[in-house]
View 1: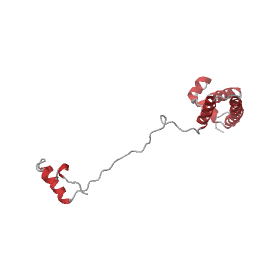
View 2 (view 1 turned 30 degrees about the vertical axis):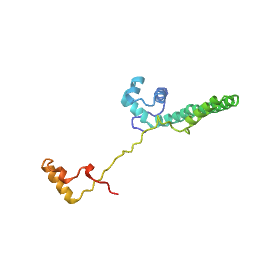
View 3 (view 1 turned 120 degrees about the vertical axis):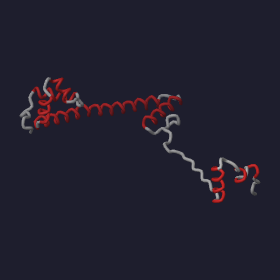
View 4 (view 1 turned 60 degrees about the horizontal axis):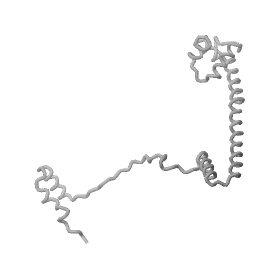
Length: 167
């Protein structure tokens, strides 16, 4: 236990716990503003062993009773919705209704194919590499033409129209 912490949990400490359970993401400053206690005193109170034991017990009760009942209720409602949907589909002969219901079920359960409009473009970068092979003599001649300002380029490389196709 903290040296200056509380020895037992009393009604004012229960009120602080109520605020902490209702607002779990509040800072000590926000808690101090709501309760009227100073931040250092709240810090000592919250870190005492008896406060921690009671807080963890109440939080476990809260999670079991409130959060557990929400999950149970959602489970019951989903079973009811499935049952009602089955009854509605059994009572209809409209193919559009059946297909629409089936399509929604597939989409919401994650089994439907993704449409092209919403698909994410691939993050692969496409790159084209061109490789040119030039003989050593032609390279030297071309470098000379470049350094001379382009004079005599026709002598080094023939125009594409002048070449005859190889068969």
